[in-house]
Length: 303
Picture 1 (cartoon, rainbow, N blue to C red):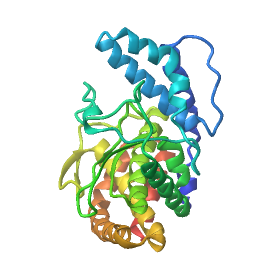
Picture 2: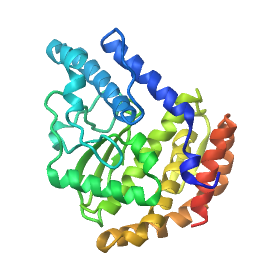
Picture 3: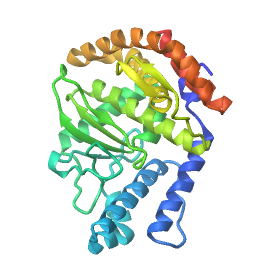
Picture 4: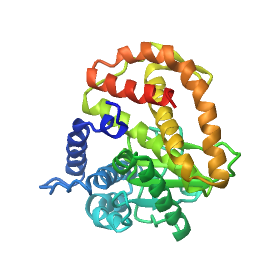
C-alpha cells in the first residue's frame, strides 16, 4: 500500500460511524432515523456526538430547556451552520475563549455546538476553505473530509508561536486548532488532528484496546508516553510530514517558512522514534491496521 489515500481507506470506519451516529441519536430521540448519505456522513457523525455531549452537559446542570433543544431541535438548527466546500459540508466556528468549557472528561477547554453557536466570520471561513484547497492538492483530502467536519478555530497566533491543536474522542470528526492566518499552515494542523480522529475511529471500529502498561520515548514531547499516545504521535506527525512535503511547492511567505521548518524538525524526530515505533506496533493485534500505520510512518521517513 504505497498510496497514502488507499492506505487510509478502511471500510470498517464508515460502518462504525454509521452505527455510532444512529446509537447516539437513538439515545437522544428514540425512533426511526434515516441514514445519511455518504457525503453527509462525516458531518452527521460529528453533530450526533455534539448533540449527545451537549445533552449530557445540560442534564448534569439540570437545564431542561437546553436538554430538550439538543433532543428535539438541534438537528436542523446545527445543520444550518454548515456551508458547502470542496470537502463537503463543513461547520467552521471561532468561539471566544470564555465560551470554551471544561468538562469532566477533558482537562483541555473545548467547545460544544449549541443553541447560541454562530459560524465563523467570513475571513475565517474563507481561510478554512483555502486550507481545504491546499489539502486537496496534497491528496490527503479524503482524510480531512471524513475526520474534520467541524472545525473550531480557537485563536490566532504568530507564525513563530506554538500552535495548540487537539481532538477529543468524545467529539469525533471535530478539530480544535489555533491558526496563523496562513492556509498552508492551517492545512497541516487539520491533517494532524484528522489523523488522530482517524486512528481513534479505526481502533474503535476494530475493537482494539492498546495496553497502557508499556511506555515508549516520544521525541516530540521529550518524555516517555503510554503506547496509545505514542502510536498516535507516530501516525499523526508522519502525515503532517507528508502534507508539508506535498504542500511546500504551493506555499509562500510565512507559510513556506513554517512548513520548511516542520520538515526539518520532523526528520530527526521520526528517526529517533523508529525503533520504539517498531516495538509498539506489535501491540496492535490487527494485521491490516499494523500495515497501514507502518506504511504511513515509513513513507514519511523517505521524505
